[in-house]
Length: 94
Figure 1 (cartoon, rainbow, N blue to C red):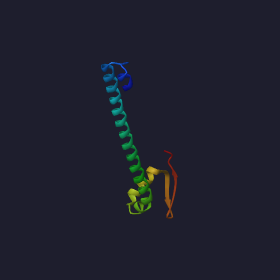
Figure 2 (figure 1 turned 45 degrees about the horizontal axis):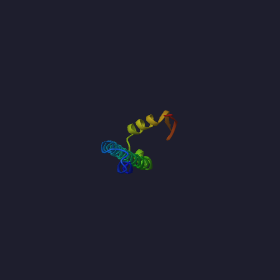
Figure 3 (figure 1 turned 30 degrees about the vertical axis):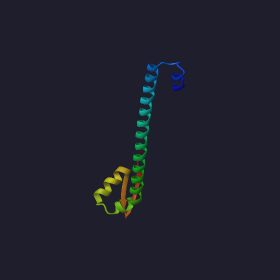
Figure 4 (figure 1 turned 135 degrees about the horizontal axis):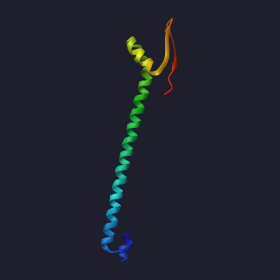
């Protein structure tokens, strides 16, 4: 477009309109890229937190009260029973 302006194929007004639109579009694209990069980072941070929680789940479960253990198991399992120190359950399908 700049060459067309220099060659006189488009006037100054048209050049200014088009270049203004292109600059706005470029700014919009850069903002969208930044937004997506921030989202990617938050997904990564949440994934790391989830992996760390899964890694520590057994230790965390062991220190909970019986009520808290029951609450967690009811969230994850259905038809759970505890007999002779053994847990029998069916996992919920989410």
